[in-house]
Image (tube, rainbow, N blue to C red):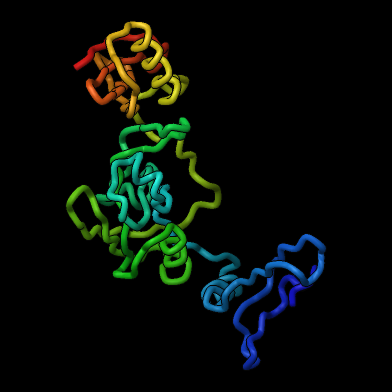
Length: 258
């Protein structure tokens, strides 16, 4: 049992072996009734010696953002319903993954609830031949099996292809990188993809050129004559409207329907 104040104490199995270190409990009554949490001994064997010798532990770092593929996400991103793995939403600029052939999302799409996703990224299904079904599988391998400077091989699905992509891991930064500072065609003070989609949708509805319910909304960053723009595609069952929106001012620069 874990009681308040037990943090840092050993977690022992029925054979008397230390299998972890207690560090927290979730309890509604502040007693040993609830869910206890412990750090596995496999992590202790890696971390403690480094803390003793160097005063800190360097965690392996891949340099990407992503998430476990859910059924809803697969539908929005146009992935097969049975696709399992980790979807690569974004590659962190300057990180280890940015020096590899791993690809992140490039088109912003929104679901029926207005939640934004970046479409077009790779799907990681294994690391060093160890299956990756959830994001937790990827993180667990990096924490328990990998080190900075180590080369890992990611098994990736890109479209219809299965690729083997080597990545030299780096050291996890002390503070999380600012993923919004990635270089693209938008001005720093420009409008967001969601706002560009809203502007484009309003313009199309006002023009009356697109009929039927809009099934898909995609915003892609681009540049025209040095001007940063969002190219927004709004698709119905019958046609697609392409709206070019100035990424700084929100002005409609072009609107076509095919």
